[in-house]
Length: 258
Ligand code: CO8
Image (cartoon, rainbow, N blue to C red; front, side):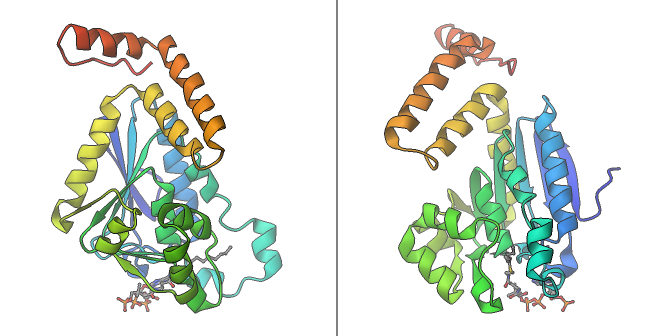
């Protein structure tokens, strides 16, 4: 009972699950799906009972790219005027930690969406790539930047210039994904990771995410300075007192998420 037609949204305790659901198009990301994913993620981000958001697709495809049929007839001014794909920046800006659970194709925009998530778990069936060059275009949702930061110039160049894809093993070796799990366990594993993250202090998890992301935006000196300021700031949270008190009392912490 929700207003979405291209995704499904479910709650699993303090974790939430967004499932991309356009099976006939291998979850190709059209503008409606972008709007729905962003609306769902932003609503979950505002919800204090959500501590982590999992994004997944189907066994066959996480997402096989941006919707080629929708893009094909667009002119430069259509794309520029609508600032095509700018909505995805709002997904990347969500403060709640996100987990991509990728099985099957994560190509083009699908790979880019997975890379916008904080933790990337791959099924052994996962395939990653930026094959836009084969369509006469280039990545448009951050692929040329995030893939290069994740795997370095050598592989990013080869993938973006030839359209070659990587299997899960290569993606893990290259540092694109944190772990490979058997396809049948993907969702269970992703939700377990999400529940673990969601059991931590929500504000402190957000601050940890922000600090790690800062590493991609700034110099080491500035990044360490940012980390130090945030580290000092966590001592203003109730959860810091609870976490350290629970440790000294040899019991599990009960975070209040504030
Ligand atoms: N867009 C729209 N429809 C798609 C897409 C897509 N990206 N991918 C698959 N589909 C559709 C197919 O058209 C097909 O529909 P139908 O049954 O109606 O013919 C259905 O999904 C099933 O696909 P296939 O029959 O092709 O399935 P296969 O198993 O034979 O092949 C592949 C699977 C290899 C994934 C194949 O579908 C494929 O190559 N897809 C395209 C992959 C791709 O190139 N993705 C990149 C797209 S471009 C992009 O993401 C970013 C562009 C940035 C532009 C920047 C603008 C600002």
